[in-house]
Image (cartoon, rainbow, N blue to C red; front, side, top):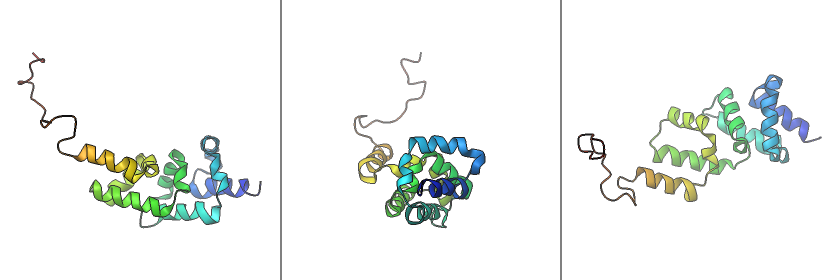
Length: 149
């Protein structure tokens, strides 16, 4: 109980939703009971502060959405999170607002490995001639389509 109350209070009061949104937080806690193994002061609040800092720029309601959709963002290593944000921003040429929108819309992306997941996917989707599709990746117009007539 010494850990349960502080973590629960932190999620309700500082991350968002309060007691009005308790049913949503119960689902999160049921799916991710691991959150109770982390210290509010040493892990959860520093990660929360990282997302709220100028470096990431989330608002408190956005942070609540991010944590509600992917709670591990509260305990992932901030150096790893920073590396992923820099990678996504530079590789996709995203503005700060676009990056923030991506994090809010798909916070699970920050749980992916840069080397084992993000780099191969980016290389595939951003390569002008993806392997396995041949050299011609152009899309024919309906006038050129034999099967469309």
